[in-house]
Structure formats: C-alpha cells, structure tokens
Image 1 (spheres, rainbow, N blue to C red):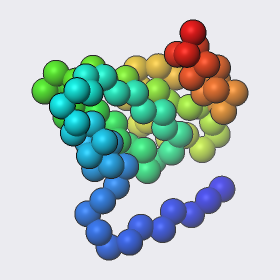
Image 2 (image 1 turned 180 degrees about the horizontal axis):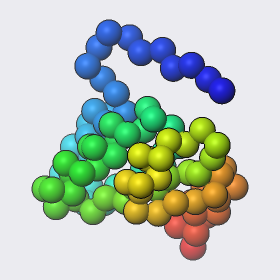
Image 3 (image 1 turned 90 degrees about the horizontal axis):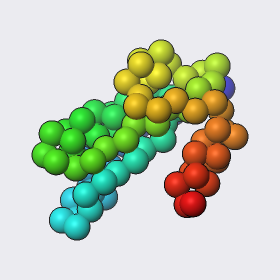
Length: 92
C-alpha cells in the first residue's frame, strides 16, 4: 500500500499526458495505469481521442487496482509481469 501526496497545484497525470502529446507530430499515445491516480490520464486520453489522436488505455490488474480503471481500459494485463510482456510485444 502507498499514500500519494498531491501539492496544491492543478497538475495531475492527465495534464502531464496532454502536455507530452501536445507535439503536433504525435498521433498515438498509450498509457498504462494501476491505481486511482491514473484515472485523470484516462480522461486526458478521452480528450485526445476526441481530436483524432489514437489513444490506448491499458490497466494493470492488481489487488489495489480500482474497478473504474479496469472498466475504462481498452486492454487489461495481469500485474507487473503482464505490463512488461505487453511492452515487450510493442517492441516486436
């Protein structure tokens, strides 16, 4: 278990994803998430998809993964080993 500390600023994983994808040549983005703090990134992917960016939401299933994350994912992998296998598959 962990505790996430958030400073009082309007920045989260979603705003970080949008800033990274702001480069005009980026046409596709993939985000792997495993906790509730990753839901804003999924929101950002929804906004990016609405303007034509190909977006893939990957949830990493674990005992701590919230049901909302798993439900919104396009792909669900099993634990960290599944995430590594998914990323390795992207390379081949």
